[in-house]
Image 1 (cartoon, helix red, strand yellow):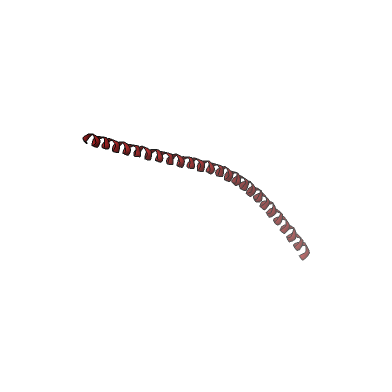
Image 2 (cartoon, helix red, strand yellow; image 1 turned 120 degrees about the vertical axis):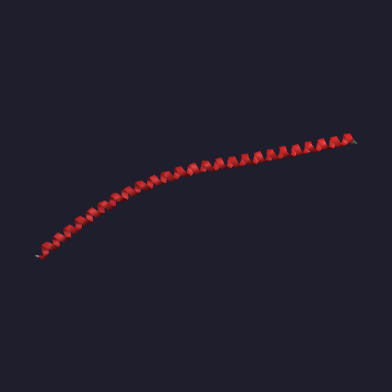
Length: 93
């Protein structure tokens, strides 16, 4: 019977060790899955960043064109106001 107790103890330790190994393997697989998910998310963030950078460049270019158009309109309005003022002055005398 003493042999059976030693054998039972050894089997119990072996089963416990196998359980820890299985737990470690499961944990490692879970971490590997999380790493793959994070790598995928990082790649998507890079893609989004590139898309946003292109959109920002386009918006800045458009803003520059609007600024130029605004300045042109302003110059034309000043010119038109001066012309109207000149006409009014000539007609008032």
